[in-house]
Image (tube, rainbow, N blue to C red; front, side, top):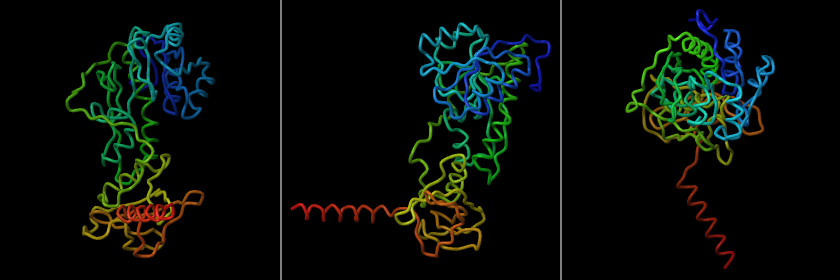
Length: 331
């Protein structure tokens, strides 16, 4: 199967739960393959308008429940009589009452090589962990989180300098084809089921505010991976330069660079037009592009000896001194 159409199989009536460009492209590709998306279920707060626009273009009705377990929503969903539920980047867990709304149950498209990389933000986590490939998996939905039987799986490469935006674009381009191939296989009865090895699996929680801060005592490889994992369209890695908060958009580490002990966070070299070398816990990191809030991004050219990050002991002592001075004034 190549995702181009339904051959010698029946077309399926689908309810597509999703968000973003990959769900929008999946809807169009399913329509072109001869399947009917009877209804699309959008996030209550979509990340963008891509899926809604695709629904308008294809004449697909839309639901956007705040709670995908609410009886009123489930009644509306059953009214569309779907054969199969398909989830592509939907943010609510589909519980048993929802799964029972379609005779063929539900399948999910996940950007992780299950049973590894279950959970959320797995593209970011795969890059942070230095993976050289990312998996794409179609699997049945059970009452766990990304634990259902695997139908099909593919992998895409992750290069040493690939950023979040580049890997995301690769996944967005490849995932709709896997979705269509999976639906075609279910429709013609050729789909297989492979139970996951649950003991060997890994799970990742969503990334939150504060997770983007850099610890300069970490290794250069870890910092290199973290910067590229959360750069555009992510929030960017953060550090401090004196009292200024900085976003680091681009940085680079060569594993052949020397390893030695010195002060983490200190600028130890300058490369004209390319950035500055900052000492890490084991080597150095070339910081190539930074931005102060409200200003344009730039290539840093800080003097050697400049320190990034927060000296926790000094900060605590300064806070203690301020507190002591305040107490003296009050007394």
